[in-house]
Amino acid sequence: MAYPTRQLPSHIRSQSSSIGGSQSSAQSPALLARIAEKKAELASLKDLQTLSAGLADQMQMLAEKLDTLSDGTEAVAAVLSNWHNVLRAINMASSKLPQPKDDDNVDDRLEAEPPLPQTLVRIPTQHAPGLIPPKDTENMTE
Image 1 (spheres, rainbow, N blue to C red):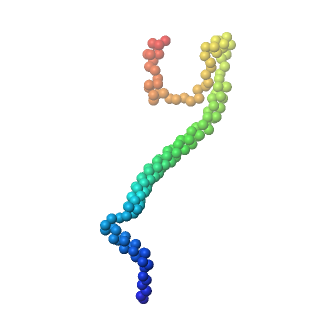
Image 2: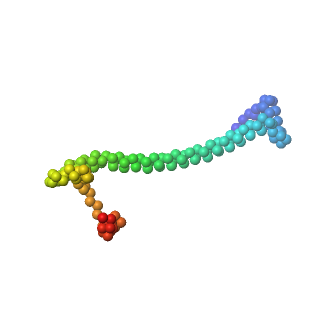
Image 3: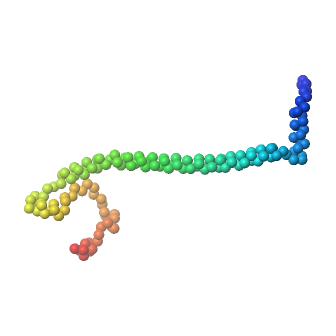
């Protein structure tokens, strides 16, 4: 099936022939300016792409740090939620302090040092010899 051929209007034919002819000799200044503008735009877009990739990496690192911070916050919340139990146990131990039977020495002892609460936790020190002072140095300091 053959299509009928149409003739192009004369003003379009003259532009297309002049473009082909001008490429061989020299391009128009407007076209050169447009090409330079597009090259500058391309360079700017490449810079934008590089900066966007860097920003995406930084946001990813920030997300990881926020996850770590969230985990740490949960641990702190768990510890703080247990403090009322610890303080209640200390209060109970302090209220159960044995009272001295010697009424004469009570005032002297209270002025010298306040009563300490009962020991709540006993930590074995046989595994930490640096915490136990040698017996010779105790005698020398007294």
